[in-house]
Structure formats: structure tokens, C-alpha cells
Image (cartoon, rainbow, N blue to C red; front, side, top):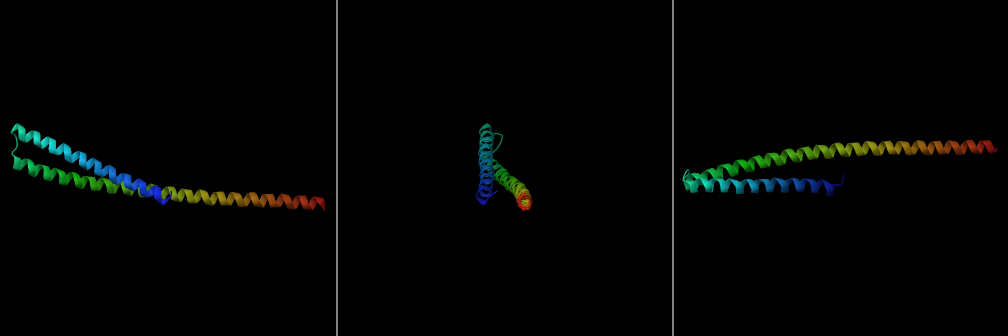
Length: 113
């Protein structure tokens, strides 16, 4: 897999993580706002809860991104190894084909003599 594709996958992973965090933060704020409006929570409690939950969400997002990136690296590494192995096999097959063709040519030459 070429480097541009690798970077594209990693960038997409980061954007997905950031999008999830932003969505989560927005939902957290909406939930807390509702609780404050209902009177079940003070503004100060709501502010502290939002900060705590957003902080925890960001930590989880970072851990998720790390895990996804680690899995992508492993997958890319395995794919690169498989491609290298296949490339080696293709080279071996080409060499065998060329050797076979050479043997045929030698046989034809001997038959003419």
C-alpha cells in the first residue's frame, strides 16, 4: 500500500474520532441544558458535569483513535508483507518460465544439429 493511501486512512481515522467527540460534546451540552431547565441541576453543577464528561469523552476518543491507528498499522504491515511475498513468488515464476523457455530453445538447437 503506498504512503499516500496509508496517510489517507490515518487522516480519515482522526477525522472520524474528532467528529465523534464533537457530536458527543454537543449531546452532553444539550442533556445538561435540559437538566438545568428542569431544575434538577444548578448551572454550576451543569458546567462541572459538562467539563467532566467532555474530558472523559476526549480521553476515550484518543484511546479509540490510538487503537484504530494501531490496527491500521498492523493491517498495512501485514498487507505489505503479503505483497512482498507475492512479488517474490512472481519473480520466481518468471525465472522458471525463462529457464523453461531457454531449455526449449536449447533442445530445438540440438535437434537442428
